[in-house]
Length: 176
Image 1: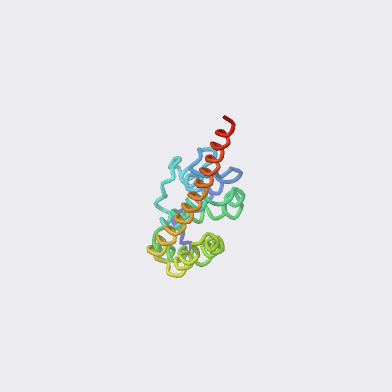
Image 2: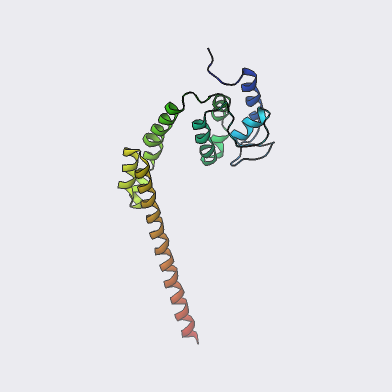
Protein backbone atom coordinates (compact mmCIF):
# COMPACT_ATOMS: atom_id res chain seq x y z
CA UNK A 1 0.00 0.00 0.00
CA UNK A 2 1.41 3.36 -1.07
CA UNK A 3 1.22 6.30 1.30
CA UNK A 4 2.25 8.83 -1.34
CA UNK A 5 -0.02 11.81 -1.89
CA UNK A 6 0.87 11.94 -5.59
CA UNK A 7 0.26 9.41 -8.35
CA UNK A 8 2.88 7.15 -9.89
CA UNK A 9 2.58 9.26 -13.05
CA UNK A 10 3.36 12.42 -11.08
CA UNK A 11 6.34 10.73 -9.42
CA UNK A 12 7.60 9.72 -12.87
CA UNK A 13 7.08 13.25 -14.24
CA UNK A 14 9.24 14.60 -11.39
CA UNK A 15 11.95 11.99 -12.01
CA UNK A 16 11.82 12.74 -15.74
CA UNK A 17 12.11 16.50 -15.17
CA UNK A 18 15.29 16.13 -13.11
CA UNK A 19 16.91 13.49 -15.36
CA UNK A 20 19.97 15.08 -16.97
CA UNK A 21 19.26 18.60 -15.66
CA UNK A 22 21.49 20.63 -13.37
CA UNK A 23 19.90 21.50 -10.02
CA UNK A 24 21.10 25.01 -9.06
CA UNK A 25 21.29 26.95 -5.82
CA UNK A 26 18.26 29.22 -5.58
CA UNK A 27 15.07 28.98 -7.62
CA UNK A 28 16.79 28.71 -11.00
CA UNK A 29 14.94 28.72 -14.31
CA UNK A 30 12.50 26.47 -16.17
CA UNK A 31 15.50 24.69 -17.72
CA UNK A 32 17.43 24.30 -14.46
CA UNK A 33 15.16 24.61 -11.44
CA UNK A 34 15.85 24.00 -7.77
CA UNK A 35 14.39 20.94 -6.09
CA UNK A 36 11.01 22.44 -5.16
CA UNK A 37 10.85 24.54 -8.33
CA UNK A 38 11.42 21.46 -10.48
CA UNK A 39 8.79 19.50 -8.58
CA UNK A 40 6.29 22.30 -9.24
CA UNK A 41 7.23 22.45 -12.92
CA UNK A 42 6.82 18.69 -13.26
CA UNK A 43 3.40 18.91 -11.60
CA UNK A 44 2.35 21.64 -14.07
CA UNK A 45 2.37 24.47 -11.53
CA UNK A 46 5.04 26.69 -13.04
CA UNK A 47 8.38 27.80 -11.66
CA UNK A 48 7.84 28.59 -7.99
CA UNK A 49 9.37 27.62 -4.68
CA UNK A 50 5.95 27.46 -3.01
CA UNK A 51 5.55 24.06 -1.42
CA UNK A 52 3.07 21.81 -3.24
CA UNK A 53 -0.02 20.91 -1.20
CA UNK A 54 0.91 17.22 -1.53
CA UNK A 55 4.29 17.79 0.13
CA UNK A 56 5.11 17.81 3.81
CA UNK A 57 5.82 21.36 4.91
CA UNK A 58 8.44 20.09 7.36
CA UNK A 59 10.28 18.24 4.60
CA UNK A 60 9.87 21.08 2.10
CA UNK A 61 11.06 23.76 4.51
CA UNK A 62 14.02 21.51 5.38
CA UNK A 63 14.76 20.74 1.75
CA UNK A 64 15.08 24.32 0.48
CA UNK A 65 17.94 25.57 2.71
CA UNK A 66 19.65 22.17 2.75
CA UNK A 67 19.73 21.91 -1.05
CA UNK A 68 21.08 25.45 -1.30
CA UNK A 69 23.80 24.78 1.28
CA UNK A 70 24.98 21.39 0.03
CA UNK A 71 27.82 21.03 -2.46
CA UNK A 72 26.83 21.01 -6.14
CA UNK A 73 27.89 17.38 -6.58
CA UNK A 74 25.65 16.22 -3.74
CA UNK A 75 22.71 18.37 -4.86
CA UNK A 76 23.03 16.85 -8.35
CA UNK A 77 23.68 13.29 -7.18
CA UNK A 78 21.55 10.31 -8.09
CA UNK A 79 20.63 9.90 -4.41
CA UNK A 80 19.21 13.45 -4.15
CA UNK A 81 17.37 13.04 -7.46
CA UNK A 82 15.79 9.79 -6.17
CA UNK A 83 14.62 11.62 -3.06
CA UNK A 84 12.71 14.34 -4.92
CA UNK A 85 9.67 12.36 -6.18
CA UNK A 86 9.39 10.72 -2.76
CA UNK A 87 9.58 14.06 -0.95
CA UNK A 88 6.94 15.54 -3.25
CA UNK A 89 4.37 12.97 -2.15
CA UNK A 90 4.95 13.03 1.60
CA UNK A 91 1.73 14.80 2.57
CA UNK A 92 1.12 16.53 5.86
CA UNK A 93 -0.32 13.78 8.06
CA UNK A 94 2.85 13.11 10.11
CA UNK A 95 4.39 16.57 10.44
CA UNK A 96 5.21 16.40 14.17
CA UNK A 97 7.02 13.07 13.73
CA UNK A 98 8.99 14.47 10.79
CA UNK A 99 9.91 17.63 12.67
CA UNK A 100 11.16 15.56 15.62
CA UNK A 101 13.21 13.32 13.32
CA UNK A 102 14.85 16.27 11.52
CA UNK A 103 15.54 18.05 14.81
CA UNK A 104 17.16 14.89 16.22
CA UNK A 105 19.29 14.42 13.08
CA UNK A 106 20.32 18.06 13.07
CA UNK A 107 21.24 18.14 16.77
CA UNK A 108 22.89 14.72 16.98
CA UNK A 109 24.63 14.51 13.61
CA UNK A 110 25.10 17.85 11.88
CA UNK A 111 25.58 20.39 14.65
CA UNK A 112 27.78 18.13 16.76
CA UNK A 113 30.17 17.84 13.80
CA UNK A 114 30.75 21.58 14.16
CA UNK A 115 31.63 21.37 17.87
CA UNK A 116 35.42 21.55 17.25
CA UNK A 117 34.91 24.75 15.25
CA UNK A 118 32.75 26.21 18.04
CA UNK A 119 35.36 25.21 20.63
CA UNK A 120 38.11 26.88 18.61
CA UNK A 121 35.93 29.97 18.20
CA UNK A 122 35.41 30.35 21.92
CA UNK A 123 31.68 29.59 21.99
CA UNK A 124 31.91 25.83 22.46
CA UNK A 125 29.98 25.66 25.73
CA UNK A 126 27.01 27.57 24.27
CA UNK A 127 27.12 25.34 21.17
CA UNK A 128 27.21 22.14 23.24
CA UNK A 129 24.30 23.41 25.36
CA UNK A 130 22.29 24.09 22.20
CA UNK A 131 22.90 20.55 20.90
CA UNK A 132 21.97 19.05 24.27
CA UNK A 133 18.98 21.24 25.22
CA UNK A 134 17.48 21.52 21.71
CA UNK A 135 15.56 24.65 22.61
CA UNK A 136 15.05 28.04 21.01
CA UNK A 137 16.68 29.89 23.94
CA UNK A 138 19.74 27.63 23.74
CA UNK A 139 19.96 28.16 19.96
CA UNK A 140 19.66 31.93 20.44
CA UNK A 141 22.42 31.85 23.07
CA UNK A 142 24.70 29.84 20.75
CA UNK A 143 23.98 32.25 17.90
CA UNK A 144 24.72 35.26 20.10
CA UNK A 145 27.98 33.68 21.30
CA UNK A 146 29.05 32.87 17.73
CA UNK A 147 28.20 36.38 16.53
CA UNK A 148 30.02 37.89 19.49
CA UNK A 149 33.10 35.84 18.62
CA UNK A 150 32.88 36.85 14.96
CA UNK A 151 32.50 40.51 15.89
CA UNK A 152 35.52 40.35 18.20
CA UNK A 153 37.59 38.84 15.38
CA UNK A 154 36.36 41.59 13.04
CA UNK A 155 37.13 44.30 15.58
CA UNK A 156 40.62 42.89 16.15
CA UNK A 157 41.22 42.88 12.39
CA UNK A 158 39.89 46.43 12.15
CA UNK A 159 42.23 47.55 14.97
CA UNK A 160 45.17 45.93 13.15
CA UNK A 161 44.20 47.79 9.96
CA UNK A 162 44.08 51.06 11.91
CA UNK A 163 47.54 50.35 13.34
CA UNK A 164 48.85 49.73 9.82
CA UNK A 165 47.19 52.95 8.59
CA UNK A 166 48.76 54.86 11.51
CA UNK A 167 52.19 53.43 10.63
CA UNK A 168 51.68 54.42 6.98
CA UNK A 169 50.82 57.97 8.06
CA UNK A 170 53.96 58.07 10.19
CA UNK A 171 56.02 56.89 7.23
CA UNK A 172 54.49 59.59 5.05
CA UNK A 173 55.28 62.20 7.70
CA UNK A 174 58.90 61.01 7.74
CA UNK A 175 59.10 61.44 3.97
CA UNK A 176 58.09 65.11 4.21
